[in-house]
Image (cartoon, rainbow, N blue to C red):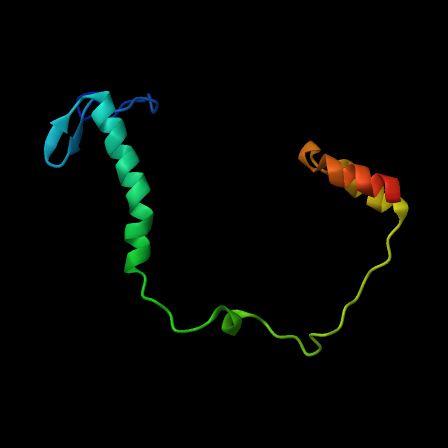
Length: 102
C-alpha cells in the first residue's frame, strides 16, 4: 500500500527525473547544472529582496560606560602553553614564537 501511494521506507533514494522550466528532465548533467544554478543564484535573489537600511553599523554597536578602559586577567605560563598546544598546525609559526617567549 505504501509503495502505491509513493511512501517508501528508503529515505536515501532520489528522483530519477525533475521538472525544470516546465519540462521533465532525466539527464543527470542537466539536473546537476540546474541545481548548481539555483543554489548559486538564490542568495543574491533573496538578498535583493531585503530592504536597504539607513543605519550605519556603529548604530548597532553597544556602547559601554567606560569604553577607554581595559582589564586583563592574570594567567600562568601553564595556561599559555595549554592554549599554544591546542592551536592547529597551520599556526605553527605562532606556536614556535610563543613557545620560545614562554
